[in-house]
Image (cartoon, helix red, strand yellow):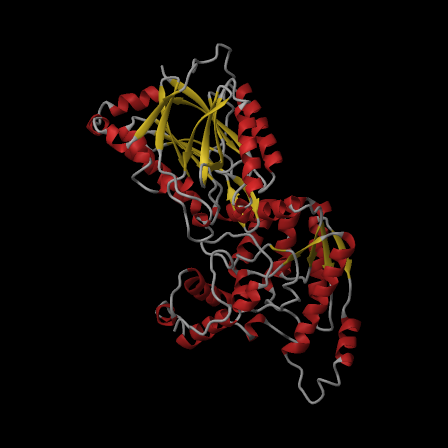
Length: 578
């Protein structure tokens, strides 16, 4: 029988760390060899990390990546490997190297370059034109890269139906957003069943600035049924024994294959026979058992936030983060995620009560810090605030207190957090959510001051759901119950509530989703059941606060359209979507 043991090496790379990424690839190659793998597959641009952005404009960076692929090729004396790298041939290409018997046998270059959302590949790469299949142990195999799989025609169709490829390898660096796992499953299943081929999809894992790569590598058989799934949000070596004879038997019943083979030369498809592909004689270890169930929606989002935060902190050389604890839901969730990402010794909480901070909020902040086991510091700001007011009394004479005095308190807190950051090398995590960031309900150089915005893409209503999820997962009260029931408030003036300035969040969030993520106008959103005057005011708030968002720290992308790299609007802009 024609069988093949494949290993999908779902690794967490670091952009620009060519030496470290190469070492990790070699480590996983050794693991795969020990497990008897015939073919090992690594993610898209595994050597450079993804996306390397303007590092690709530096010739030395490209040359270092080419040197690394040669070193990796020399380690393939007993295994075949497919590794993502940057190919150079007159121009540069997003490519996959076919490595065998210590050599780079050939290179496949990505044909469809994404240039939407967070992707900008046309800025750097030239699309590939050449297509080939290779034969390993009498098994014809095709290669594609990420976006190539999303198109029903070439290169997949040519490899499978014209060239007879029975196994399709897709290497990918596909970033996460909620709901994408299901979309990928449907896509891969469809490609497998449409082409009567096994499809093996190897995805990157890890955080890179705003992006999180969720792994979840998968293999689907020729019927479109799942064979195996990799872990989500962690590194994994996914092994499977593939029965290619079953693909052949199924294809005997499909006359498309025979007809298409007659005109394969028209498609310019090259065929490569790998030498010395006999199966090793040593006994092959048994495959480990694994759970192929995907995470539920809230577990998935929470895991994405934790991985994105942890990798941003670690990959940028920090060991400890600092969170301002207000006693509210946002800071409570941020601190909880930080502990899950870095451990309790890697998180410090600081409360900075003002004259308007309630006793209950300070108690809730203390209780949260105790529940998650972090160091807790209290630094009152009342005296500092009074000093500011005294200093500004002359220029402010004759004016009434307004948002200016409120924002001074937020900026004092931002100064304190950044002072602690400078003194001890702690990275400040901001706590604002997507709802606040969208409408500008935040203070520049105040609560927006920091290095990473964990909840930047998390709407307020989802913040509550994730906080409840955390408590349910732990089976006890981690985030204090009082945090859920008290009205959201910045506590910058007496009896202040968020709803004094904003619509209730269950109303605000659907309007924001319709406008920010779906580009709907006032009339369309009003037809969803909202007052037109309210919709108009929300859109005005979103539009006039682009300048704030442009100055905000990066944060984890978890929705289809995040603020920042996904949604790019000019700051100076008089157009209104009315």
